[in-house]
Length: 321
Image (cartoon, rainbow, N blue to C red; front, side):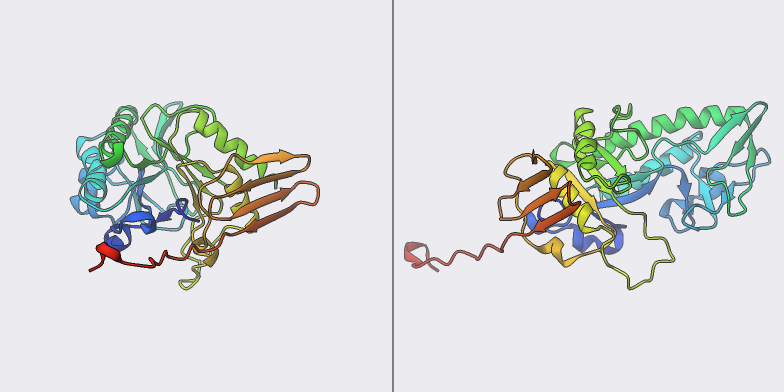
């Protein structure tokens, strides 16, 4: 699927995969999180008491996050040290590293909140997690600081080569409005909840209408630790791949959390937008690939193109060695 693959990985151990050139170069985004600071994160070395959310007794809040990682701390956007630690990640992996952009999990979601007279820190309810008591002043400082962090993080990404690389507004309702922080990519989750491939077309059209340059569509869930280490297969079904082919535009990426050999087969650029005639929606691509959705029979047909053989000159002439 040339020009439409999206590889999400931590960049430092695999920079070779992200530093190629030309059409074969993988697009590599750094996974970042605007809420959690994990012990294995580089910035955690600055110390929890300096960069993380503390309760009213000065103890760092810790919980088990939804994928099962414990301890998971909260970056404190309400303190300058926390904000600078958050932004340093973007300098390390994008400005000075090989990443093309950032998939920022949690985005503008706040794990600090006040209800009546009590303010607490807690994001993931369940797994035995207990809220930590914080002050209203901490909540207010976190809320304002988080906005500052997001605005400056998007500015760092936007300042890079080519007028800016990918920065996702994950969890923002990107089909309805544009986020206020300047992200250039929507992050759509879930596959086809109603089983209708044309729903992908409608969602993509709505996102681009809001002014986003990129769309990253994650059709499945993350690869939680319980997934076998040797399970590297794609989590995208043929129905979802076909729906993506019907919906994609320049700047569209499909995130499958794994690999399928079909992804290496020729597709090419779309020759036109998808067209619907009766119950059938089709689309064709420049390298011979095509997709056909029949709403009456509920069948998706995906056909790939053929590899283009290299041109062999009949004579080197004056341009020979």
